[in-house]
Image 1: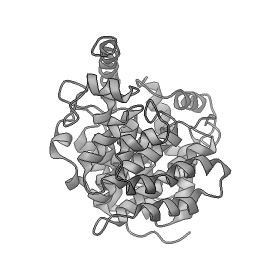
Image 2: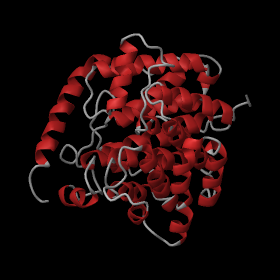
Image 3: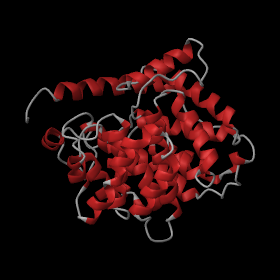
Image 4: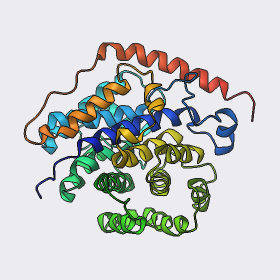
Length: 362
């Protein structure tokens, strides 16, 4: 394996925090059409999940699991895989709301004794994409190591090769966006070509590459992410299928490479799995813009705990410091005793949102 270039700490913080903020902003519109979401939750300039405050979903939790597993891994793949599997197993025991079926089935298999190499189920859902940006920021300078860690992160829950291709595309995009922190944004045609080189040998990547190939002409035509989504034939937005989410999220980041606010709002307006689309967009674009590029009010108005915005930032900083590449580090402390109470309160509010969707405006 190639020697790793030192991690850009600001990129790691920006990627993890950007993903978390995008997740919290997109959560109210999750699994809604663009039209319905616009009518029920029109104020994309602020959080709307808990009045004017935001909370994180499983997208942020999974990204944080990756960060913690990197810290304890010492750069060793086996240790990373085992730690990530352990965190997913205990997380599932807390009955998280709104989790994909594939991830829950995989976590059940982990509890029943399957190894992390064999616990995944056949699915091309979005779980691996939400775990990928930080891997790209940290490991992208070594393609083979990046590929190995993305594969490990993906196959714990999802075994369909499309899931791995989508996650690898996201990881590479985050790496390339991080490389441009001090200069001009990465070119869309260049990024698409590089992703093609990375995943093109996999037959399952063909459909994803076809969608990514449409990014450049749509950008040149000045189209918005919503229009790009329509051009892909996604009438109900970017669904929980990874080959829908990844092209839309990358398009939003490429369309607004210097404007976090515009990129996240556009990703959410596309509809569908809005929190994951916005999270992936935030994870990629945050790697370029850092914390300074994320609107302060969006960070300050997150009220989640114990995984608060401050805690997420601290985790990103620890991962970005890179000491774990030389030897295993302790994970960032977390008040795990509070998680069952937090999850119960979150579940109640999710039910309130489900009930709210039964009423107008339609």
